[in-house]
Length: 107
Picture 1 (cartoon, rainbow, N blue to C red):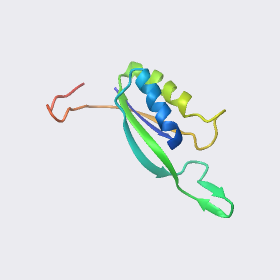
Picture 2: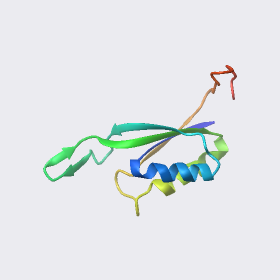
Picture 3: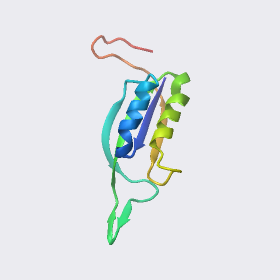
Picture 4: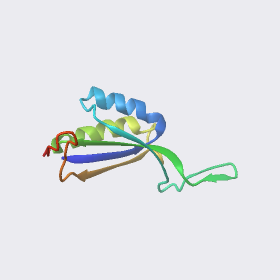
């Protein structure tokens, strides 16, 4: 299994969640996050904002579903032709998954 963490612009979250649901991926965790990427924040007039508001979407999928989920997120998170600040997607392997209520290992 793979854990996919996508850090995206807040204004893109609702469409990404809708498209993931339509593609058959309803289980998503959403977190408000603050940070900066290579662009090192944003400057508006004389004021520099070093940390920007973003959203992190986390989901765990089967190995063979990873590419489809990454494509759905990328397609819907991109602004126009793509610009700095559109976000990042991190994919990691999941070693174990347990359901808290039953204690069952799902792998």
